[in-house]
Length: 117
Image (cartoon, rainbow, N blue to C red):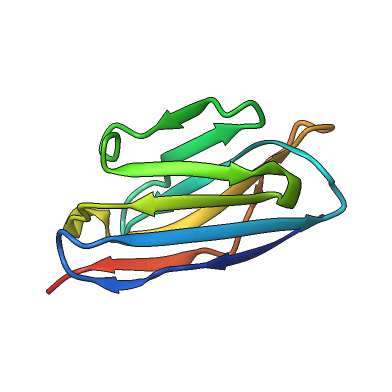
């Protein structure tokens, strides 16, 4: 199993910035992919950003150019720097981790991000 420690969510005004962090631990020592998805009320969960062990990244269409994902593979930690936040970025953000040795995806408990005046 995988345990997650997520942090960095909160309330921010439009145009502001937040930095999310997530550390995965437990039965697996290495994760091929780590990232973030988000889910707004009444919406499906969608990709925000993912990063592989080699540093390849993928971003959702709505966040490219504003968000930057990075990871410390030695610590199984992933960060999401979110700039120029918009009200439509309001959602619960879920950390994702895919172990290297099995085909499965584990999810954190989620952290709320609210962008509002």
